[in-house]
Image (cartoon, rainbow, N blue to C red; front, side, top):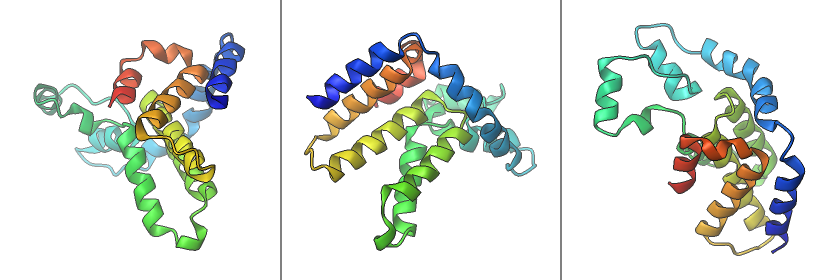
Length: 171
């Protein structure tokens, strides 16, 4: 109940603050850095789309991905963050499995993807899952998804019109 009240208060407090453009401005150098790291080849635009979240160029491949509904696999989404978190949990020794190093890397990756709505919602979901485990809240997966979505919406109310945010929240 406390967390629901906190989300409502955040939504009211942040309704006139354009956090979306501030966060995007902060993410811009990280996003450009991510793009600069991609290997140079004929597939560069696809590497950049898959890892950094750039738009795919119009092509037969893009049309085929759209036709087969596999386009979601070729763009940055919350699943990228979940996969990265799972890999980090396997790589970091058990005694170091505190949220700070993993959370920092996930935050940096979210910045490197241009602070896109699905990745940010997934980051809030990971943070909510951590809080759920840390404070023994015993929330179900659905409650964590709902709270993370509401929290994202409270911080970034303009994303309520974002198709990618709504799809990632419902996935």
